[in-house]
Image (cartoon, rainbow, N blue to C red; front, side, top):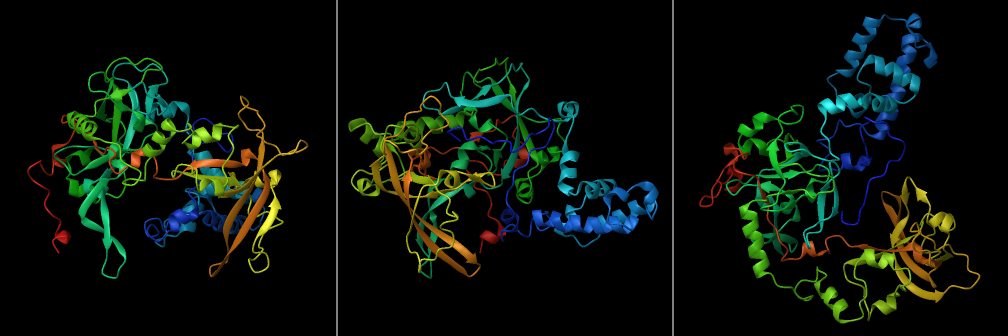
Amino acid sequence: PWWNRTSTALRDIAAGSELYIDYDSSWFTFHSRASHFQSVPLASSYTKALAFMKKYGKMLVGTDSPDDLVEDKMMIGDEVQKDLWDMIKNHPYVSRERQALPETHKDGIRAIKAGDIMTVEVENSIRSIEYLEEHGKCVDNIVPQQSTIPHAGRGAFATRFIPKGGLVAPAPLVHIADKSKTNMYAETKGPTGNIIRDEEKVVHKQIILNYCFGHPNSTLLLFPYSSNVVYINHHSTEYNAKLRWTNDFNSFHNKDWLDKSVDFLEDQWTAGLMLEYVATRDIQPGEEVFIDYGEEWQKAWDEHVKKWEPTSKESDYNNLTWWTEKRETGNGDPITAYELNKDRNATIRTWAEQQTNPYPHSLRIRCYANTNHDAAYLFTPKTTPVYRRPFDEDVDMAMDDEEYHMADCQVRERYERGEDDSSDDSSDDTEDQITHKYLYVIEIDVEKTVDDMTSFHEHYLITDVPWSAIKFMEKPYTSDIFLKTAFRHEMKLPDEIFPKSWMNFDEKQKPKAKWYELW
């Protein structure tokens, strides 16, 4: 992401530990994924599995005490325990709870004693540095910074010396069998009046195409998802890295797939291919890394630049061109969320002021506000249609489950803070501790759920809100890269490494239709 969004450790992480994030259980139970992930343990699965483990421990020693789980107190022998555990783990009926059980009997005993299965799993996931050096791939050889190419945005820069032939970065791949899947279509009305896509009118391509490798003679696209490799920019003459297939990572990379057809890859629902970026010459620390995107990409880019013209706000409102011109010819107002959030002296326009002097359409305003505040929680619109309260820094800006409370808001009023006002308007940026001149009244509408069948809206007016509690954010899909005329083209995987078995059509021959497309 452009503005340096990073991942932060929630606790100390030992060297060699695997990294995890919480997808939330709904990601695995969502209806389109449920059948694929029906055996993946959820948080509740571990709770039930641990309850089973405690009963299992009691069966082994006849008591509820984990301390009794020692060899001389076991009621059955070691080999019988292992056989019993294998039978439990290999039972033909698969469930989330069974999958949450420890893999071995020994780990099961450890989990009972620890009172937590996941602690044992985390401990088992730790690898020694020596193991990782032998079996792993280094992903921190490059970091994103401002590119040395004008207007290119971010680039990838070496964090250390990389010798000629050395690994720059690994690139595991997601394969997309049909590049037409990136097409974006015009809309039309369906038989019942609903809006559907008009498959006769391709209006653009999805932006993921810019980050994929492909070939003119194939429908296949390969998307690299390794850390920071998407920042590696193009240079047709001064490139210092190239691509090759990995040859020492068989636990992930399936070499035999290089001899299979695209139809075969289409049937593979998991990733199983890996490229590597390798240095074509010595790369010094701090040097930007480049590859050659290919002659086809270069021609497409040159043609795009030759034909491109700025679009008007009326013909393509999904851009910043109009706002940029307005700034250059007007009062020089900031137009990005980053600029607005850094300008502590700037007043924030009220909703009424924005009717005649709007912020760019690409921005939205969000505020720190805990809508579960004790003083307001579960007031129904019938009794309290509008709830008014002062800003409470200790509650509104507190973290809950490692996240801040934020909501879309409108700025309704602005007034000067009093001389004795104690509202904290400091920020983490020690370089700028200027106190903002104003306080604000914000308006928030919140939908709350009582149960599966009942929800209601709460309407808030929060007074005395400091500048530091109001943030500008970019709306999704509103930057210039989403212009209707924005550049889209895949990078070319060089001929010498693109498998012939994947070349399923040439420029004069379209791929044969699938049987289900003939109906």
